[in-house]
Image (cartoon, rainbow, N blue to C red; front, side, top):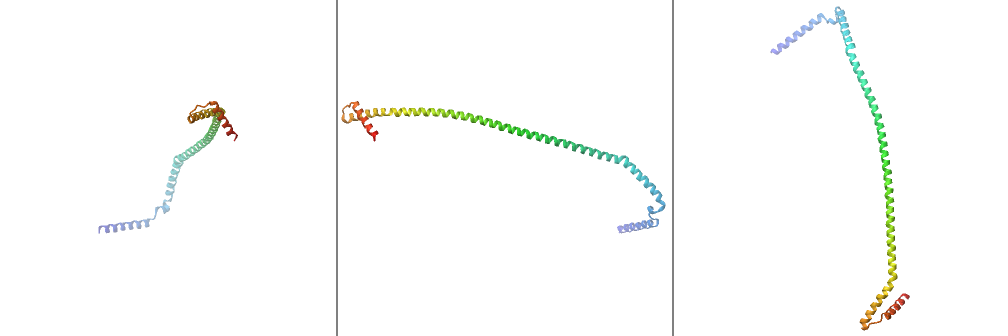
Length: 190
C-alpha cells in the first residue's frame, strides 16, 4: 500500500512539473534570453578556442611532428641497415664462393699429388715385380736347363739301385747312364 501511495505521489508531482514547464516555456526559446545566451556562447567557445589553440593543439601538433620525425628516422635507419645487410650478404657470398673455389683448388692439387705419388709407387712396385718375375724366370730356365742332367743322374742312380736289388750285382754306372740316355733320346724323338 505504501508503494502505491509513493507511486501516486511521484506521478502527481511529475505532472505538476510538466504543467509548470508548459506555462513558462523553455528559456532557450524565449527571445528575452537570447542575448545572454549568445554572449555566454561566444565567451564559452572563445575560451574553448583559446585553450585548444594555445595549449592542447600545439601539444598534439608537437606529438604528431615528433612521431613523424621518429618514424622518418626509423625508416632511414631501416634503409641504412637494409643497404648494409645487402652489402654484408654480398661480401658473405663472395667469401663463401672464394672459400669453395680455394677448397676445390686445394682438393684438386692434393688429388693430383696423391695420384702422382700412387703412380710412382705403382711403377716402383711394378719394377720390383718385373725384376722378381725375371729372377724367377731365370731360376726356372736354369732349373729347366739343369733338370735333364739332374733327372739323368737321378734316373741312373735309381736304375742302378733297382738293378742291384733285382739281380743282386752292382752295375757299372756308365753302362746304366748310357742305357738311360738312349731311352730318353727315344722318348724325345716320339
